[in-house]
Image (cartoon, rainbow, N blue to C red):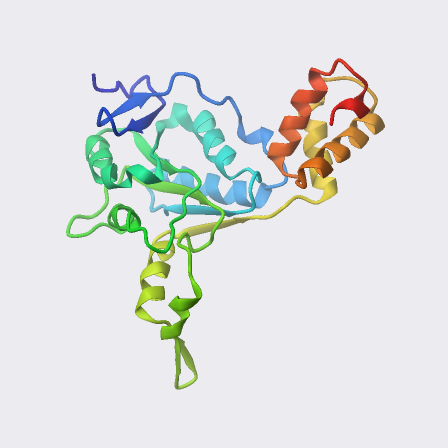
Length: 261
């Protein structure tokens, strides 16, 4: 059954049935819940508002450290702008061969669609990224005006670059010229007009996120911060994801804060 996009806000592509499945339980995160990424948030919000208003907008690559809010930012955009006609379709990297068909299904609809590719990266011998290229910039047919691609990745250039790729690099008349292999790989990231970088949190940023998430949880703030620091040390991460996991443990604690590890 086709999805009724007047009511559905998001869908995921299911290759076995070759169709979209409506998402009925959305992550409720909002833009105001995301701390420590104000600059990235403002830039992506501005781009998304341009997209919704029919102004030129750019495909976006959100890259950087794990757990720093890349995926959460896209989910929050949907919750804040669904009323303005924004919709999201998520597709896995393994299913990118189906991406042109997914886009064809929605290109004539009045809503504005973000195709969300989470944790996107490719090994050196993978070629699925070629299907993504045609959607990002088109081929003989231009991409539809109501579709953008927002992708997250831990890699800035998306595709692994073994040392052997650099064998074709030359310096000609003082200028660096990449070999054909590297040119092919860089051309994918170049198709994303907006690059947003995400970096690990400082201790102060991490504790600010913890305070926000545990604002109504009660308890002693020094004890909360001590437990939060210990929790982060055991995971070698001060990411927003770690802060959220800690907040769940703090809220559900049945033992002193020092026993949350």
